[in-house]
Image 1 (cartoon, helix red, strand yellow):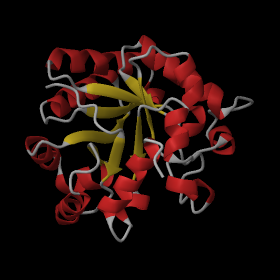
Image 2 (cartoon, rainbow, N blue to C red; image 1 turned 90 degrees about the horizontal axis):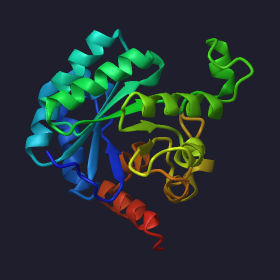
Image 3 (tube, helix red, strand yellow; image 1 turned 30 degrees about the horizontal axis):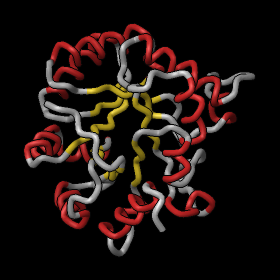
Image 4 (cartoon, one colour; image 1 turned 45 degrees about the vertical axis):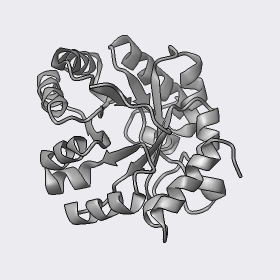
Length: 241
């Protein structure tokens, strides 16, 4: 399976059912190069939705943030590879052995599945990290960079990091190391309702900071015309008015 590049926009199918997800895919009209199947939709519909979308020619990012013992994550990675997803997220907090085991499982699958290590959720800031004992006297950026470096050393293909850390990650990463950024709000939306995400930016700012792909959910899916909203984001990425 050849890895898709496309227009850098990943539309998050944040829907509770297959019917609603299918409707969103139809309304998007193939404009985003990628769709993201997250935890809610996967729990509701199971592996079949990933398999079906891949068979339809959609490039799928499966965002499960796997975090378990190495053997369990490796086996789950192998299963995902068989579904046809092109990107899978695992959590860097799972540590070296877990990430290394997952990377080896992806390679052995021969499917071209690429693994992204989630660094720090965009819903968290320094106070949140300190509360769980993960950021005492350490900045969010320091934790993200440490986890990104570990992901590189373990053989992952990239990381998920907020737009605010993308530049620092890019500065220390190989050219082919992928950076995917959630927490993206189009055209000034970062200053508006950030919902439950705290570390956000506009699409153009995220790409300028070094992101390879951006994940956008509500600003596209809640729009009166999701396809037009996606087209506007792609235009913003290209620097067009």
